[in-house]
Length: 107
Image 1 (cartoon, rainbow, N blue to C red):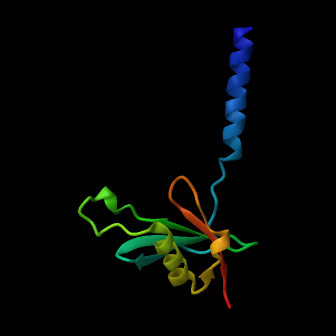
Image 2: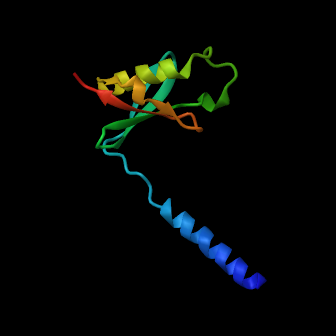
Image 3: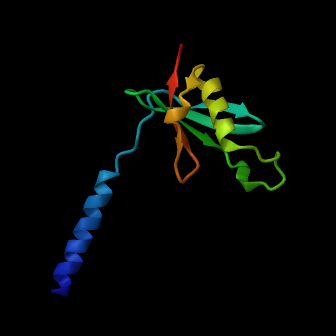
């Protein structure tokens, strides 16, 4: 009985990891932009709707780096600099890793 439960648990764990095994390929290359003396990497992650991801460099956790600034304001500026379009703020969200995702509007 214990062996059967162990095998089922192992099979379930392997099955769940298979769903997340494929990496997300960027539709275009990553653009590096500098916002308020911080470096951001902006990448397109989906086509329909067009969604971009902005990730801030952690500056190697340097405590003597530039003064802290609000990340949301920096992310909005990073999206604008990298894409030339305005981010749709209502669609913007941040994940637990500190990456920002947003749709953009090019008018």
